[in-house]
Length: 422
Image (cartoon, rainbow, N blue to C red; front, side, top):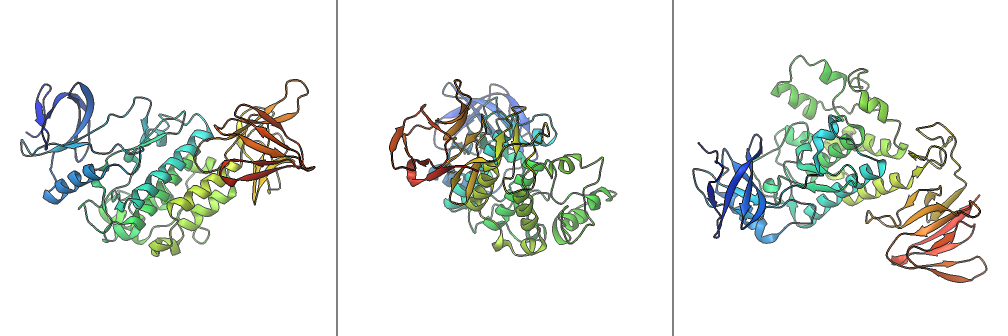
């Protein structure tokens, strides 16, 4: 038996050992155990069907190279070969992080749109760093992400399949997340990673698979041949403007039916483009991670706090209507911060993100004396504010500047924004 028992010692490749405490869970590749390593608790993934020597050497190499970013629960130690198998040790997942699949099943929900957008940004950033390190993931799916529903912080796990770009782990991934060309028999690379990333982001926002509509519902039994058809040769986006054959089915795909119109139009447009037949057939034209970050940042620019019901809502400033998605009342869009072509609406409670570091820099508050709006500096750096007449004032952290037409705020990093009152 390849399974391990409580109290059993497992030797590490380069000296030392871990002691099995208990089983945490299991999947198709192996079992994850809680282990003790010199008095510190860690997780050990133990393979039930151990991959070959090249896989083992790649794990050792990835440990020497180190994680692309803190978002990865990266392998820290590889065990010696024993009991006919081996495994690797990684940090434990904190208890406030939940598997992405729980969000899709509504067992866990994001506590705000802010948290959801933060999670999307961090997933993109994690894979941007992965590719910058010269890796490709090769087995990206919903089981790879653990998310804090309150903050949107993300941990990326199951990194044993990460390989240098151009090398093969021997694992293709799950059909629902594999790019059509991989389903068709080609090998994974950074371009197929980017397709899988688009699928993950779509599912994060809409809680539905982008190719699972009427065609999949009509399938009598999901066999391997049907998988190759629905996710490969005949993959059809559920909102393909040129093909209505795979539309979401009412009563089955309620999540995406309800959410499709909630998020701004630009998000719908990008997904429609990314899942078009042209992008499916031309992998090198897919959005890269930094482009996805810009898209999500643009969506976040349209997220405000409704001044009536105090709930988050998306407002498209160039749209014909500016109604809260919760209470249905009109939102005043006459006051905004203009940064080049970016417009961030100013309503009480709304947080503004000046750059793409996923940390808010400003918050709109109300002056308790006269009820007028102020912008609070919630960053760690001072700003300068210039009036139309040329007067300049410094605004330190936790200080305020008025929402007054024509004021120009100079933020850290050379970013500038002008307050506009129409």
